Length: 243
View 1 (tube, rainbow, N blue to C red):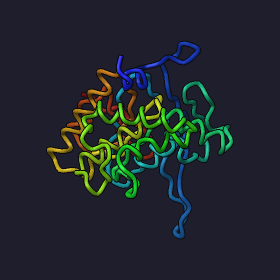
View 2 (view 1 turned 90 degrees about the vertical axis):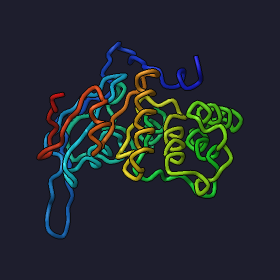
View 3 (view 1 turned 135 degrees about the vertical axis):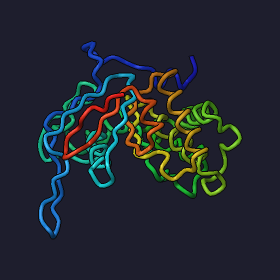
């Protein structure tokens, strides 16, 4: 078993449940000078271990807000949410940060790589933040990058990488900490069609062959159709899309 397979294989919770994330009656909105704007209105969703779930919807409907809530980057105004058996909405901010760093990996439309560091150092960063020894972090980052086909780019800074290579580094960084799930927000939004297709294929391979659980917000119909399920965000709630 490779390092990446070991780091990302599907795992059942201690109670044997294969539901990784369960959110119910989630409410979230924003207060603006024009008044309160509701975004999520009593939303319910479950994500199972090993599932690749696509979330689609019109621009501005709140897909990124939803991903931020499900990824514990933002708190809802009300509702319940359990991740890997933990009641995350009752955690302190410190405990939640530590839990999130261990449990989730994130890939955004913009790769958000640190420009002054190499690909290897960027992937090491979450491991060092998680207090892993530097030697262990370096070896883990190196092996994941090699598995994602970046063995010739380990010591290149982001400015020396193509857009597709930068996103692969971002995926490697997201997987470095052996997360329970990968949360991706328009991961191909800034890529040309050919490069985006290659990234789609890589993400599908990680899910199908490695069992990486994924929640993907996307406008790309091809990518959405390759997922196990598609949910559409409309009027603050999720509705299933028939294949």
